Each structure stands twice: as structure tokens, then as C-alpha cells.
Length: 447
Image (cartoon, rainbow, N blue to C red; front, side):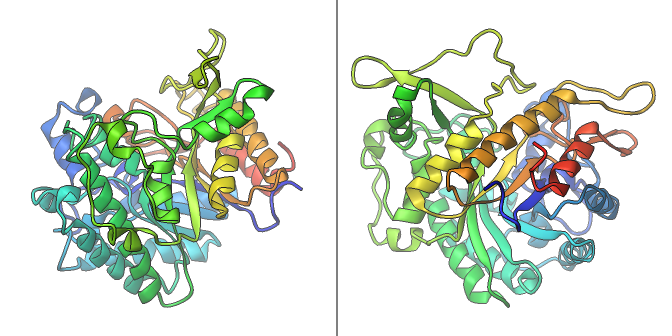
């Protein structure tokens, strides 16, 4: 079977990671701006103040996308570029920038896929409690309404939130992302609940105020469990959605409420928390998304522990690891989409998948990255296997189009298909960009 004829081949970025212009064009501060200003949260005090300067160079970047043959570009809106305080007044310079970006993409024959929130939470709203504030769902709804009114005449695919596992679990529980806080479970769990409410309200607002029929989905970070042996298939499939311990990365924790209208029954017990909510909230939280976006980079093999449970299989010493120290585990792009599709029966987009490797330009100014090419080929073969097995997978977005600001890692990790000199802003497509272009031209037949 292979990939469908209209399969959406794309690449992805996020506003704070590529735009730069952090204090230009009327943009307000967000929590990552402040984290960079504080200096001690980010590797070598790197800052996204200039970043990839996509704000000024997006036309050059779109030309590269067109040359590669991308069918779609997934990008996020900077909430504070559009609404400097997070609510209220809309910034005309922000409106102009995203209008010009969208129009240039469409002119190049590239579909814009818009993410509303990719971690850069408005600092003014953070000072009012952020996602901890019971008013935060309404703030997000207000923002989504503005997005629909401004851009839905040309944008047909919207993603409400990107990886709540990271901005709640790592931001408010593990202190690994902005705002770099560590709370007891009684705080991040209500913030998680408010995010789900905001997601539900935003989904409805996008549909209600859209100027044409739109598709609205959500994107989650995954914790893919893969069977170590043929005998472990049922075990891995089951365990993928069972909550064990205080794990915000559990696959059921966001999508079960949003799609099925229920939390895992053992949620409060596993987190050791006093977590209660109004059951009527689930009527808002269950929002029937049109698709699920999966960000998949790696997975873990599991096997039966002989006691009715499972155990993780320790990777062998020859299992390659990326610059993020993640295992290279291509089968995660088979078992991840398969597990989510079989549970929810919703179309799947792989909204992020990619690899950071240590690399630099040759003396001739070129960048050969055979390891990235091997990564893309091996993962996409597994995604095609999922499609062959009947998974309704509709698109793939490589992360990332450009080398960029990788959050607390600063500019030390390079995921891009395009090398960026962060001093000169010169762009150099890597060999992997040409390879990915060939995959797109063949619709994955050359893998």
C-alpha cells in the first residue's frame, strides 16, 4: 500500500526556536524570554533573541522549502507576538507577520499547518498563575478565537497545543523547561486539567469562528513501548496506555480525556495527589479532535517480567544514540502510530521526528550527514510499515527544518535539514535535505 497519494510531507519549527526578533514588532515577553534573560537556565547562556532570524528571513526559508518540495510547513504562532499581554489588545505587527508568512507559503504551494501554543507562554499571564489559574482556559479560548478570525480563511489545519507533557510535566514538575519550577503534584495536576479545558474550549472556538471548514487536532509527546519479542506484543500494546507512577508522559493522560472523556482511573493514586475536579468539566475536555499529532523520536523495548508485569530491556552497547542521548529506535514510528490509531481510531500525523547529531561544515562549506539520512530512511520505513498495516497515517513532519534554539540546550544541538550559521545567519542545506526531497518526490517509494 505505502503512503497515500495525498500524503502530507513537511517539516516543522516553533516560533521561539526560529523567529528571533524577541523584542521587535510590538511582541510581548513570554516565559522563555525571561528564562534566557536570567542566564542560568540555558546552555552557555544562549538566548533566542535573534535565533534563526526567521522573522526577517522567512521568505528565504520558504524558498528552501520550495526547492525541497515540501508539501506543508508546520509552524507555531508566538502568542505574545499576536497578543503582547496574552489577552486583550491584538498587535497589528504580529498580525502582519503571520499574514505574510501564510501568504508566502501558499504562493509557494506549501500548506500552512498552524500550532497555537508551543511552550512560549505569555509572561504577564504567568505572573497571574499561568495554567494554574482557573481563568487560563478562557485566556486560551480568547486567543484561539482571534486565530480563527484572523487566519482561518487560508489555514485549514490547526494544532491547539504541543506536548503538554513538556510544558506542564517538565515546566511545573521536573524544572527542566520554562518556567523551571518544581511543584508537588497538587499543583501541576490542576494545571494539566486547565490545559485540557483550554484545549477543549480552543478546539470549539476554532471551529465556531472559522471562515471555512477546518481540521483541529492536538499534538502529544509519546512514550512508545515496543515488544522485545513476538510474545511481548500484547504486553507492549496494553502497557502503552497504563499509567504507572507520576508519569506525565503516559500516553493516555492527555488523549484519553480529550478523545474519550475520561482520565486514567488510578491517576490520583499513582501521583500520590489529592486531585479532584468537577465531572462536568469532562463535557468541555472531550472535544473530538479531527486528528492526533504524535511527536516520536525514540522508544523503549519491554518484555514480561515473569511476575505478571513488564520490565524495560536495557539497550545494548552498540545501539546508537543521538546527540540528545536518545536511542535510535526506528520501530517506534511503527508501534507508536499503530498504538494510538488502534486506541482512538483517529487519523495520525507524525508532527515531529528527527535527530540531532554532532556536525559542522566541511572546508568546502558543505555538510554531509549520512547518519541523519540513515535515521530518516529507517524511521520512515517503519512508518510505511504502519500504513501498510492499516494505520490511517496522513503526514510526516521532519524536526526540524532549520538548526535552531533547542530550549535549555541552546544552540548546542542541531536537528535541522538546513545548517544555520548563527553568527551570519547563512543557510546551508545539508545532504539530508536533498535526500528528504528525493523521498518526497517518490512519495516514499525510494526508502
